[in-house]
Each structure stands twice: as structure tokens, then as C-alpha cells.
Amino acid sequence: MAGGTILTPGGKDYPGKLTRNVLITCIIAATGGLIFGYDLGISGNILEEQPCFTVFGGVTSMDSFLKEFFPSVYAKESSIKPSDDQYCKFDSQTLTLFTSSLYLAALVASLFAATVTRIFGRRTTMLSGGVLFCVGALINGFAQRIWMLIVGRLFLGFGIGCANQSVPIYVSEMAPYRFRGGLNMMFQLAITIGMLVANLLNYFFAEIKGGWGWRLSLGGAMIPAIIIIIGSFFLPETPNSLIERDHHKEAKEQLLKIRGIPNVDAEFNDLVAASEASKLIKHPWATILERKYRPQLTMAICIPMFQQLTGMNVITFYAPVLFKTIGFGSSASLMSAVITGTVNALATLVSIFSVDKWGRRTLFIEGGAQMFICQVIITIAIAARFGISGNPGELPTWYAYGLVFFICVYVAGFAWSWGPLGWLVPSEIFPLEVRSAAQAINVSVNMIFTFGVAQVFTLMLCHLKFGLFIFFAFWVLIMSFFIFKYLPETKGVPIEEMSIVWRNHPIWGKYVPPQEEARIGGNV
Ligand SMILES: OC[C@H]1O[C@](O)(CO)[C@@H](O)[C@@H]1O
Image (cartoon, rainbow, N blue to C red; front, side, top):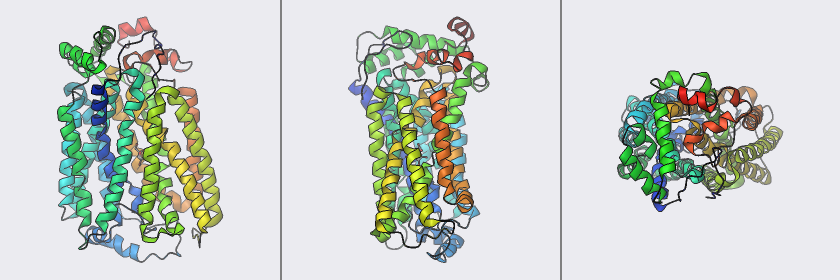
């Protein structure tokens, strides 16, 4: 992770190294992303349940699972012929309820988690997330009826809501500001690793004789949950949160330990000042609606929304069918998961090592351009073969290889831009007084759009056909313009000094009061 010795916009340069202590702490905390990733890989990547291509991963592609809980879906799936219109699919209300329960639960949990995070600290929320997720995994692993699956998924969702609300904030507060970007992005790295591992396990569990492999897939979610439970027992609380809860002495000791230098007074005093200002705010939910927080509120809504409107989950949906064409036959979904999953994780690593050197805006805009170009190429290529009928006929192998290549380039573009930045930027731009509430908005919007895109996708695929990819390409253009115009660079800015970047911004400067007024009004 590159740092550089740039002074902050406020002219400060808090000393502090990337200590082993902080590195290990942040890695442990980031494992909180594993639970979300594991769920996305095992069943949450709800596009994988579109049964018109019968090569997907996820438990909903296991015949034994479908036969036991969704027999009508299984019957319909078995009757689909390869010559049928591949764009259109049938629908199942219960299957939708099964998948959607998690997103709704995560949304609700993140709102509660905001209060827990503020009053009891970030660590408590992480721990609760792990415990709730573990309970959900247990219920699902032993499920006998659909209602048990749904209740289990509700618990998984509660766990994800808590973890996604607290982990990014935790890491951003712990990290020395020069390394914050890279350390925070380990959260998304953990998501991608969780997805990859889940996809692999699911593939092998599906082979188990007797058709009970899905129990291992679902119950296996306990492992990432136990990792975060044990991890959060050992994790220290962030200095920001300790100060917020009036444990000043402990906070100072903690800061000295994580910064690895004998004098942390400058940073400590600024954390105290930010905390004093935040104490004036009694109702963060009402406060965040005030005009002076408009930039943060806009980002808390737009960034997670745009992250999902990149179409990442939709594009990777197409990959398995192409792998099948290349000749992987029944292992197409495994190959697809391994290749796109590995590209996803490796490209996230690229962003970890470059975000604090090149900055957030550069990655956002480069990643956007890369995704846009790939989407246009993929659209043209798919339109040329699938046409309006939705029946691809025989795809030449070279054609499928080419498409897979562009899918991988697209995935890499996402993985070093909107994927990790979608968690990093919101977690670092909110002032302490509204941080927990704003992060809950971020998580909620992410959940709504992850779920919404997947649901609407089915309908859109039927009506827009290959135009669907252009739909997402259009959004990628809009979001890149949005970043260019509205997002100031936050690289190398201490988290509690972030208000300066908004104040100096040509558009947001009109919303944020000058320093003196802000101090009186509680927005330092
Ligand atoms: O890595 C891809 C995954 O990352 C997310 O955007 C979460 O940050 C998921 O919606 C997606 O499946």
C-alpha cells in the first residue's frame, strides 16, 4: 500500500506508521466480509437461480435442494429445452421470498446496527453480526421445511446487516489515514474470497451421494461466522468510538499502540474535537437530512446504488453458459466461478495496492471506462449471436473465448473500482456525528439495489434482451460523470478532517458552512 507524505488539506500530517498491530487488526476485521461473500456465493447471488440455464452454482441449482423445497421450480426447470428462448424464464414466488428475506433482514438490521455501533461500539456490532449469521447457518443447515429456510435466511441477513454496517467503519477508523484506502478494501477482498470459496464448496457438495450436500453448503456458512466471532473477541475498539463513548484514557492508549509512535497528541486532540462536535447532535437520523450534510447523504445513497447498477451480478450471470460452450460441459459453472472469481479477487488486490497512491477518483473513472467498453463489446457480440429470438444456436468456441475474455476484463474493472470503493468511500466521508446512521443508509441502499437489480433483471432480460447490457452501460456512463463532477478526492485526508474537502469543493462548498459557523453548529 503506497502512502506518500502529502500534507492533509488542513495542513496537518499526523505521524504514524502502518504497524503490524494495525495491519493484523484490520485484516481480522475485514474477514467480516467473508460472511456476505459466502452467502452471495452459496445462494445470495440470486441471479444464479434463473433456471433457464441449468449450469449455475448456488444451492438453488442443486436438484436435491429444489426437489425438497421447491418442487414446482424443479419440475419446470427439468422441462426447459436448450432450444427455448433463453432470455425468458418462469417465476417462483417462494423462491423469491427465500432469497429476498435475506436482503430485507440485512436492511432492517443495518438500521438497528447504527444505534448499536454508536452506543456500544463497532466491535459489539461485528460480534453480533457473527453470532446472528452463525444462528442462521445452523437453522439452514438443519432445515426441514421452507419456513426454516426463510427464518435461517432472516438471521443470515441480520448478521450481514450488522457486519456490513460496522466493519468498513471500523477499518477506516483504525487505519492510519495514508493507508486507509488499502486497508478498508480488504473488506471487499474478503467478500470476493467468500464468494469464490462458497462457489467451489458448493460445486463439490453437489456431488455428494444422497442429495444432502446442500446442508453442508448452507451449514458451512458457520465457518466464516466463527472466524468473525473469534476475531471480534480479540479486536480492540477504535479510538474514535472510545472517545465517542467517553473512554478518553483508553482511547489514547489504543491510539499510541496502533500508530506505533510515542506522541499521538495531534491526532488525539482532533478526534476529541470531532467527538465534542458530534455530542451536540442528539438525533443523527434527523441531522443527516440537514442541508449541510447533503454531500454525505448524496454519496450514501448514490454510491451503493451505482455499485449495483454497474450490472456486475448480471454480467457474471452470463459467464457459465459461455464456459459450457468452450467445452467445459458439466463443470462449466465451476470453471466460470473459478475464473471470474479469481479475476475478481486478484483485481481487488490491485486496488488495495494502488488506491492510496492513485486516489479514489482515478480508480473510479478508469474502472468505469473499462467496464463501459467491455459492456458495449459484449452487447454487440451477444446481439450478433442471440439476436431477438434469444436462442444462440451453436456458438463457435473462439467466439465464446472472446466473450469470456471481455467478461474478465469487465470483472477486473469492477473489482478495482466500484466493488471496493463502494464500501471505502462511504465509510470515510461521514463525520462522526452521523457516521453510523449514514453507513446504515449505505448498507440499506446496497441491499435494496442488489435485490432489486436481480429481480427486475429477469423481467428486463425478457423485454430488453441484449439491450440489458446497454442499460447497464448507460448507468456506468452516468456514474462516471457523477464521480467526475461530485466526488472530491479523499485520498490522504484524515477521517475527522474530511469536512474540508467538501468545503473546498466547487459544488458542495455551497452546502457546507464555513469552518467558524460549523464549529458553533457542530460540524467541524
Ligand atoms: O464482487 C462482486 C460482489 O460485490 C458486491 O458488489 C458487494 O460489494 C456484490 O453485490 C457482488 O456480488
